[in-house]
Amino acid sequence: MLAPMSTITALADLEQEIAAPGAGPDRLRLVGTPFVPEVRLHLAEDAILWWARMEAAAGRSLPPPYWASVWAGGQALARHLLDHPDLVAGRRVLDLAAGSGLVAIAAALAGADRVVANDVDPYAVAAVTVNARANQVRVTADGEDLLDGVAGVDLVVAGDALYDAGLAARVLPYLRRCAERGVEVLVGDPDRGHLPPDGLDLVASYPVPTTEPSVDSPVRRVQVLRPR
Ligand SMILES: C[S@@+](CC[C@H](N)C(=O)[O-])C[C@H]1O[C@@H](n2cnc3c(N)ncnc32)[C@H](O)[C@@H]1O
Image (cartoon, rainbow, N blue to C red; front, side, top):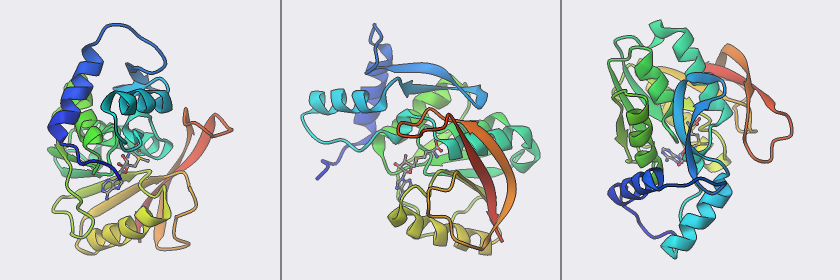
C-alpha cells in the first residue's frame, strides 16, 4: 500500500534532485524530447533505477515514475499541437494524465490561453511544475482525480492515457462525456491494446522515436484520434 504523499513534499524532492551535483543512470537530466525538440524535460536516465533509489531513500513504496520518461502517445500529441497551433491558440486546455507535462507545455508554447496539467501522482504534479519552469511557460499543475466529472475547458488532450485496462475504462467515458458537452478532445495513442474498436476518428499518425523500456523497435506508430 502506498503511503499518501503531498505534492509539496514531491516538489521539494524533485527540486533537491535537480539541484544536487553529479550525474548517473539513477539521476534526473534536463534533456530535449526526441520527437518534440522544442520542449526540454527533467527525465530519468533510467526510470527504474531512479525509482529504486528514491524508494530506498524514502523507506516506502512510491508510485511508478511514469512522469520520468517520455511516452510515445504524448510525443505525438505534443508534436501535433505545435504543428497545428490553431487547435490551441487562445483556448483553455486540459492535459489529462499529464505525466511530465510534455503535452501541456506544448499547448502553452503553441499559444493556449490557459493550460491545466492533471495527474493523480504527486510526483507528476511536481514534475509538471519543474518542467513548465524549465520551458518558461505557465501551466497549472493539478492533482485531483477528475475522471468522474466533465472538463470545463475548450480542449482536452490525453497522451498515452489508455496504457492499462482499468484506467482506459474510466478515461474513455470521461472523454466521451466531455465531447458530448462540446469540448474538443484529442487522444495520442500507440495502441497498447485498450483502444475501442470504434467511436474514435483518426486525425493524424506519426512515427515516434521511443526510449521506453521493453519496446523492441526504436520507432512506434502513434495515432492522434478524436471521439466521433
Ligand atoms: C503513461 S503516462 C503518460 C504521461 C503523459 N501524458 C505522456 O504522454 O508522456 C500516464 C499517466 O496517467 C496518470 N494517471 C493514472 N491515473 C490517473 C487518473 N485517474 N487521473 C489522471 N492521471 C492519471 C499516471 O500517473 C501517469 O502519469
